[in-house]
Image 1 (tube, helix red, strand yellow):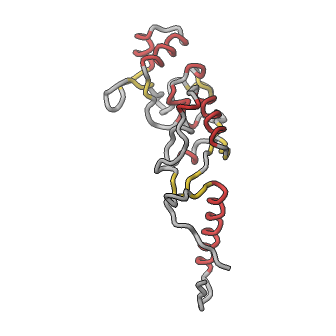
Image 2 (tube, rainbow, N blue to C red; image 1 turned 90 degrees about the vertical axis):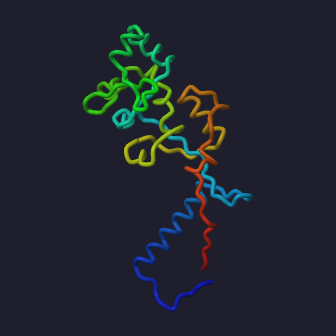
Image 3 (cartoon, rainbow, N blue to C red; image 1 turned 90 degrees about the horizontal axis):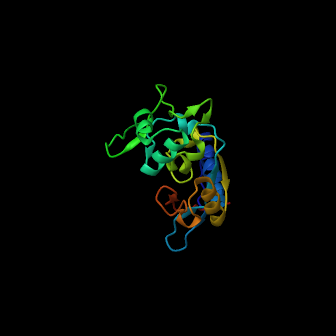
Length: 187
């Protein structure tokens, strides 16, 4: 046990307290792999509350031919009309993406609702559980639920239309594995 002869400064006490809280949270939300000694996070399912922050975030929503056909049919347009009025060339010039309004919002965001919700692109349905970006929690109001692996697969399947077997768990990829040493706490 390391004992300092000097009292800890206020900043050091806050740092130690923060370290302790983080370590305790990790114990609740992670397990330690006995072979690799990595901390593996448990699945967290994000329940969308339709805040539409993702519809207002800059980026591009890539479209497949099937999605173009579904949305054109839903809007009673030909595929050609849909492509001309609602798509643009992707940044890499390898496909089509939805256009944005001048405000940067998705072209289908109207009065806080998605005009094509029943046939929205897969990319939209996959957010934020199957893909997201580092700061998404600062904007997205989805509610986080710690769930078991089977429940994670089921909930994501229901939200995305994908089969439960095709859904990858949020670990062990590098974005959700914390490679930290085991923290030791003395008395």
